[in-house]
Image 1 (tube, helix red, strand yellow):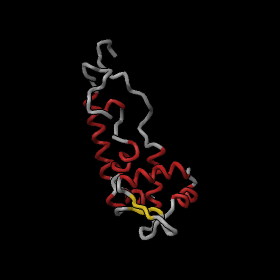
Image 2 (tube, rainbow, N blue to C red):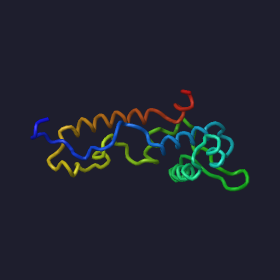
Image 3 (cartoon, rainbow, N blue to C red):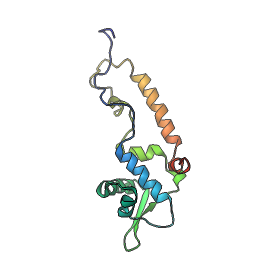
Image 4 (cartoon, rainbow, N blue to C red):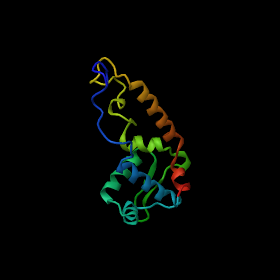
Length: 149
């Protein structure tokens, strides 16, 4: 690369991947989608899937606040989906649990990367790629995970 090139220096991280929080969130939601008539406890799901109860509880709280799942207190209480699986886009799940989707850190903000005051030569291409990924995540919903086992 020539020394006059303008490239953002703040590009850390590895390959594109979904986080453990998103993975657990999808596992939680697919478990709830199994029987949409009944409420299911987080403890039971954690035991069935061999997941951390406290971590799953935190994820359930986030999904509940986003109206993706609803809760019921009491003896037969627990959680269930607030919408049909085909009405819950993967993009929404990811953004509720991790925030704005961005393949590089400088795309998390709408501002220009602070490391590249004069502009990054690849930012617009990365933004276009990021938009394509978001379209893909928007076109897939929870039902996708239920029908592709």
